[in-house]
Length: 360
Image (tube, rainbow, N blue to C red; front, side):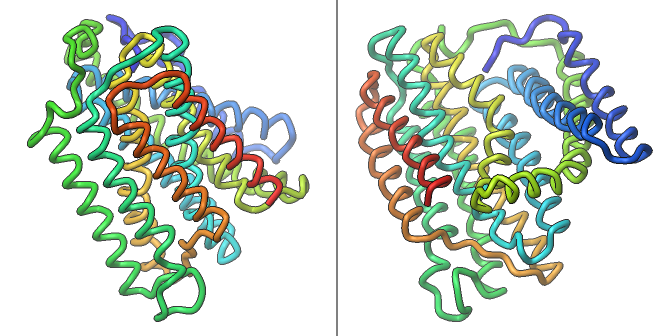
């Protein structure tokens, strides 16, 4: 995570209120191209600002609790975007949650992790990390992703890649419980598994004061609410743009996941370049776990309440990519040391995912 300063940067103070001003204008004025551009810029700015304030709070509470704060903040934004688009669009967007969660897993496990390993390897040749913590995170990620994204294709109670109401409730509860157990292990029972081996990597800046962290927490809430409302305004435009471009519907999920994970990905890459690979992996894998462990239960609860269909099963091509990602990830994280080779392999898988998404 980045190094918070003794005061909050001016842009992080201005951006939350600027986002609300743009939101007010969007509701008060007729929709136009310039206004939609401003809404998009405000949405991106609010996401970056929210993650920055989450980093300040995270640095105050320390590792590994800090990465948990960041992961939860990012997941709140992701869930808000998914639910707002799905409820606005109706049954034709029943697979958006699946597309977004799968995109988040591929972006994190191949894109962000690959870039971190490559950039860290270029600068430091080899980097060390706690293989026990990484292996634990990957085991939970494999279980959650297969049970929620692959298993719906093989159940027989409901026709198609969907779960029945009881199965969906079970998937949501089991995902939340498994993620909760992982958080308990990460923060309490085996906290040392997720800490770097050298003190310099764990303590790299003075933590902010309690008052500064409290102010950041308040601004974080302001940003999160603004993100939800701005997303509702912009979501129909994004869908129309994707349709007009002739891109597959799954691209909407990629856009949502990329927008949410971009600030967190930049923080992870900065940590890897600073030779803090343990923190980098905590950020990346924690975001992927929260994306499934918190998004699926929340979305499942919303759609069980509304009665709308929720498609979760991925297709055969995506299943192959997911399995290959999990196998390569297991080999990468099993030794506790990485070089540019592992980074290049993960980035090649990410490139294949993007290409096949646009040219299925």
